[in-house]
Image (cartoon, rainbow, N blue to C red):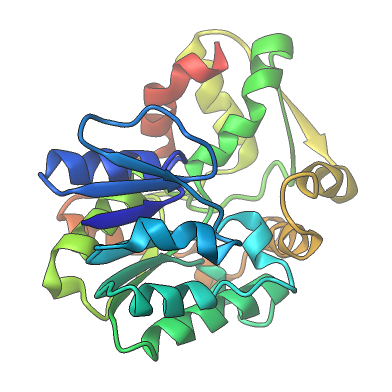
Length: 279
């Protein structure tokens, strides 16, 4: 049995589906109960409360670990989840980490994630680490303003990074959970091209067949919105990256193609599959 945390999210949902379609027994973990694919067991749990997670790990052979924003806070202890998994008999963990662990190792949230990576390496378990950059699905934050005002509001409109499609992350995660060849692998996951927020707005407009206006936010305006959803340290780290990505953060990684034997999906492809969210 394979446990998928964050199972209702943009990575966890397609990963759960892919594993179920591959004939695996899957336990999907999320804070709230939602509809799941046929045959998938659901457990409501909060990863910050280990006692709620323990029942999901009973009988599990592998774990996909996705840490929610509150687990990046200074007082959080996400590495304890690795210990619980090992004590529960889990033999393999695939960790969704962050590109910034390598490209910005001194950022507060990156230091915390490095601690989790280190705990995993030292656990004695089989492991793989996925380090994606920016997600194409972050554009869903604009969905309401596109629907109601025909507007995308974002900072640093002409600064781009190679955002990755969460479906690619899910497929790489499935490969790492199921294929022994990926044990000990560290995979940096990006899309196939650098794309700016302004260009993303243009791609959404093209998919909708209607104009979408781009409004550039200041850093402070963007931070005010972000800290409603993530700790301040993580907001600052993210804004540092998207305001001035370094050469490593602009690099197109070959790792999606290495694992999946195909090129990564483009942002335009992601928009084409998700146009309904913006209508």
